[in-house]
Length: 237
Image 1: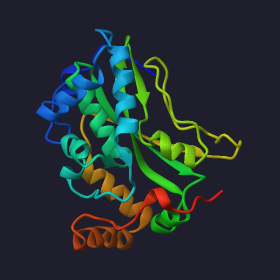
Image 2: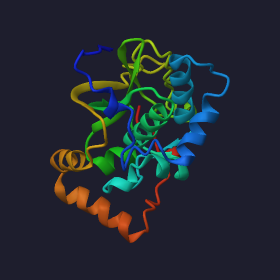
Image 3: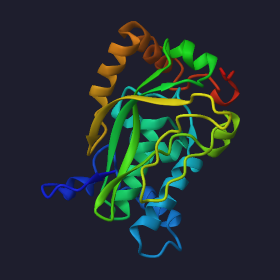
Image 4: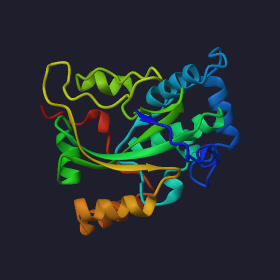
């Protein structure tokens, strides 16, 4: 949690962008439905929004990733699936739609319980520039991590991440069997929008330019469909 600076420009955290399109009609409608009966309390609204994105948008690490429109909140909502950054973009847009100052943040994490196929795909157990959302609530920035839906967590024997709007919701260090799960290795700051070029550059450096170019080529050749089913992959434990 981070206290609010007196110099914080809340306007940029409440305004729509071409990617975080919080003014899109479908975003506004989805947000309104998600916070129904939450009252006027921003904390209660943020909690409901996080749950809606966590479980309403299926986690898929093989989604297209190399263009701004791949992260556009309304596109993520329409597709019903995304990985951590795209889900964070959607949650950020929903927060702004509800009048809650919202931004995206990034970290690198080491995943000790990834699938065999995903580890082969990445060539490492590092998830570089993992994305999350931060809401400004009760005078401080609070982190929400909506990446993994509850069904996926059960399969990986990890408790679904809960968010109460007052404490940071970050990945568990251990799973339910006390095995190492997620380890944060670096933080990359917070942004009012998705820094697509910076993310892709970091991935090329971490995963290799040839590997990233192949991901893009394969996606373009298949019309944006990876042909992979993360939910059926082999869990390494």
